[in-house]
Image (tube, rainbow, N blue to C red; front, side):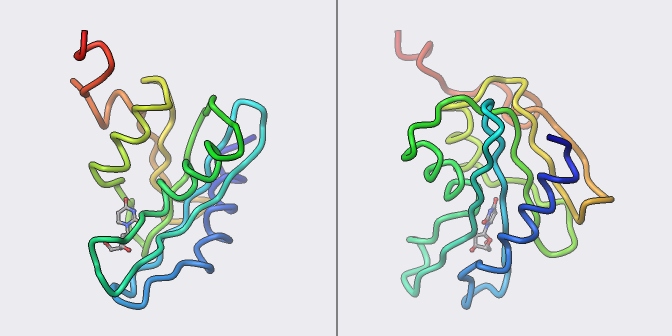
Length: 130
Ligand code: THU
């Protein structure tokens, strides 16, 4: 599964974004180690704090379908390299290794790739609880 294909899945999903308050649709596509892809969109609410980001939607969909191993996520916003919010990074850290690839995409031809370790260094983890 190439980056371009994953980005195109995120672009397709973005059309289903429910974002009437921000007018900022986001789409995400999560690649499982099985090769399966789970997409997600941001789902807003009139009580703004209840909004769920696209990345977490995709991750929660995959987790609730029994998936546990992930390789990459592509994220598309509005013509910027959308950098995942802190909450989404922490949720990624719960389920993904430090070499998990996070693809910030403007489109399938214009994107940057970071690892989770790069975008969430010194993260709080289970180790800290011991
Ligand atoms: N949003 C995401 O879906 N992912 C992010 O990583 C950042 C923000 C959404 C939440 C809200 O619906 C809109 O973008 C504006 O913040």
